[in-house]
Length: 95
Image (tube, rainbow, N blue to C red):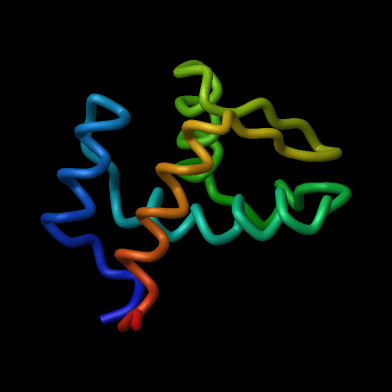
């Protein structure tokens, strides 16, 4: 199923982040991915709940991202991790 937090995704998170992630964090990754790939101007914080902002703050504190109302920037290592997690969580099959 798409967007479901699985044991293999948790293993990937623990290996990279040194912690588990929540379902909410997994669902925030596509938004981060879209924003960095499309140079989005402006994050709509009014549409984000407190937990999502806490996740961004945690990723910032862990030095994986820098974010502001104008844009988000990620480290290359976080980008690679996030792409793996997105593939595991949202892509049904590969050739």
